[in-house]
Image 1 (spheres, rainbow, N blue to C red):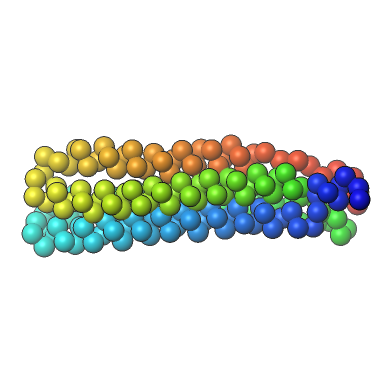
Image 2 (cartoon, one colour):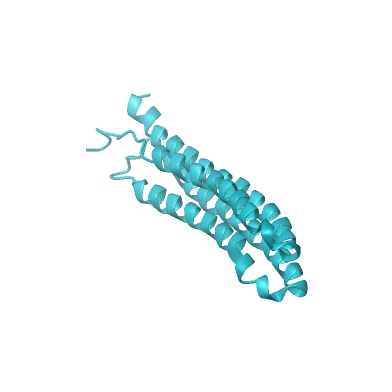
Length: 171
């Protein structure tokens, strides 16, 4: 078996596409959970103090941003996946694994951040509904929770730039 067939098999793009899927799906699950959990807290708080609903919408916005992180990484990875030419793969296993790692990094970080934002957002907006002085503290906690997703995005962008070019395959 040649080195090109070992490093550039026809199955290599599967890992890249799994990276695309992982980034988008996991980040969106985190965004959906954060939005839903925070939304329940906002609805509950809004019954007692409807004037604070718009001010306390921040956790929902922050959770939605996590989905955008996943979309960004998915589009970047998808744009790097090269289709086969003349029956030979132009996409290496190394690149596929790097793209899978990037997708998982962004997606799972977004999932964790979404869970944190949802839990903090739910409890935080209820607390702010009773005591408005807690607003700044809630925002600071939400910022640190959002940072987890941002860290995943940054590392995913770095990982997505790793590639190995399959030269000599059918050229």
